[in-house]
Image 1 (cartoon, one colour):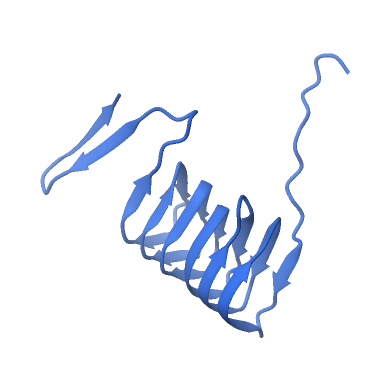
Image 2 (tube, one colour; image 1 turned 90 degrees about the horizontal axis):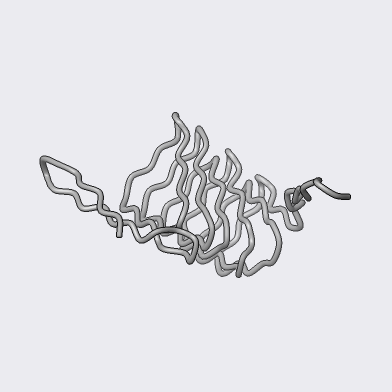
Length: 137
């Protein structure tokens, strides 16, 4: 097949936590997990994707490859690849990822850090009360 690009299909959901379920502790997973219930504790995956559904309430430290937020997250999110917040998603806490996207209608209150990857230029954001400056090296 010359000239055709291979398109990677989105990972299918391998684990699901329903809206009536709750977990108090640590969730470790591979692949993609969708949370629609309540989680308190830690969520960990090396390269995995967590989807926080609209009805989900997560009070946790989140360490994943990708985080897609449509519900409520209170705590830290550290993603290796990206964080996406879609309405009516709410994040209260600190987030860190090389790519961060917050759609109009999504809510974020906390600190944000854009971490470097080998394909992302070294970018620093400095802010003060009156101005914001961007430095690229």
